[in-house]
Image (cartoon, rainbow, N blue to C red; front, side, top):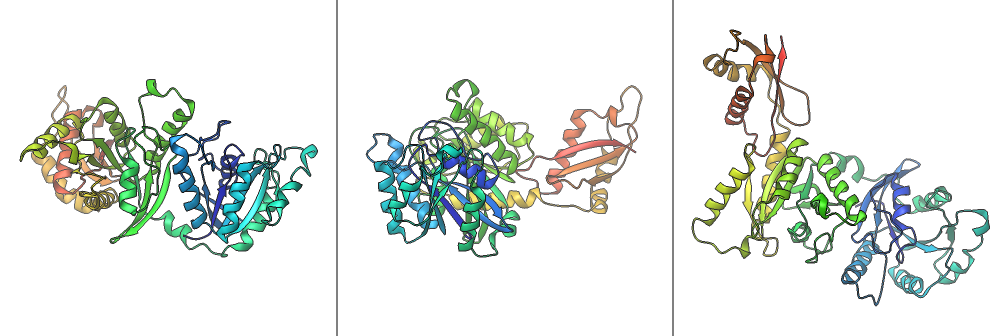
Amino acid sequence: MGNIIAIVGRPNVGKSTLFNRLTESSHAIVKEVSGVTRDRIYGRGEWNGIPFSVIDTGGYVKGSEDIFEGEIRKQVEIAIEEANVILFVVDATTGIVDLDETVAGILRKSKKKVLVIANKVDNNDRVGMSAEFWSFGLGEVFDLSAANGSGTGEILDEVVQYFDKEDPRGEEEANLPRIAVVGKPNVGKSSMINALTGEERNIVTNISGTTRDSIDTRYKAFGFDFMLIDTAGIRKKAKVTEDIEYYSVLRSVRTIEDSDVCIFMIDATEGIQKQDLTIYYMIEKNHKGVVVLVNKWDLVEKDTMTAVEYEKKLRNDLAPYNDVPIIFTSALTKQRIHKALEKAMDVFENRTRKISTSELNDVLLPIIDSNPPPSLKGKYVKIKYVQQLPTHAPAFAFFCNLPQYIPDSYKRFLENRLREMYNFEGVPVRIYFRKK
C-alpha cells in the first residue's frame, strides 16, 4: 500500500470526525458515545495533488470488561504497523489522562512519524490549551477543530512531506473489481475475509453486529487481484433499535450499490430466511453480480444427497432469479473458500461481457422468428433487431413496432434464451422493448 495515515487515540476524542474531514466523506460513524468505531476503516484523500489512504481506528482502551476492547487494541496496533504517518488525537478540553500516556508510550516504540493532534480547539479561548501535550516527547503539537475543519490544512501540509509524491495505488485500485461480502449479522462475513487474507483483518466475535462499518481490503494472491469489502450485518428494520446500527445498515446498502459482485452469505444451519431474501433482492435490484455462499456447511449433518437437495430447495426459494452459482463452504475450516473467489471473478467477467449487435441479431432473430410474441387484440408484434446497451450491467434493447403489447412471459422467454446462448450466470439481465 502507498501513503497511509493512521488515526489513533483513546475513545471519543474525535478520530472519526477527523477521518471524515480528511476523506471528505461520511464513511466513519460519528456519535458522542465511546466505542462506536470497532474495526479499521479505510478511506481515500488527496492534498496538493498527493493521494493517500486514511485508517480510522477504534479508541484504545485498557482494562475494560467490554468484549470488544481487546480486539480493538489489536486493530489499533495493526493500523500503526501499516501506516506511514500516525495522527495521535487528544482532547484539548480535558488535557492529558492516563490512557493518553499509554497510547503515547506505544507510539514512541513504533518508530513511525507521529503528529500529536489536539482536537476540539473550536474557538480562540481554547488556543494554547494544547501546550501540555508537548510533554509526550513526540514532537510538534497541532491545534485542530475536526468539527469545523480549522487547522486541517496545516496538518496535511506537514503530513504530505513524509509521503511519496505519487501513490501507485490510486488509479490502479479504482479499476479493480469490487467484491462485497454481504449477509445478515453473524453468518461469518468477517471470518471469511480473515480466512482469505490469513490475518485477523476484521474483528470476529459470536455477537451479531460486530462489524459496523464497511471495510476495504485489497486481495492480491493466488492469481486474484481485487478489492474485497466486508460489510456491517444487515438486520430487519424492526430489530435495528440502536441508531448506530441503523447507520451501519445504510452503509451496507451503499456498499452493495458501489460493488460489482456480492458474495452473499447465508447460514447453512438456518437455511434461507426472509431477511436473507431481502438482501438478495437488494443485490438483484442494484443489478450486481452475485455468488451465493452457504457458510457453516461443516455444522450440517449430511448424507450423499444433502447438498443436492439443499441446493434444489435453495434455488426454488431464490426463484425466479436463480441462475446463480451456489457454493457450500466453511470459513472456519477454509473449505472451498477459494472456489468462491473463482466464481466471483467468473461472475465479474459475465457482468462485463459485451456482445456485438451483429452477433446478437444473427443468434436471436432466428429464435424470435420461430417463436414470435403472441398476438394481443389482433395486434402482431414484429421485433426488428436487438442490441446491447452501453451500461455497466447486461441490458438489451429489442426494437419492435408495438412494444406495449409484449407480455412479461415473453420477456422471460427472451431472457432465458440469452442465458442459454451466453454465460450470464450470477448476473441480472435487463430487457427493454423500444419502438422502431
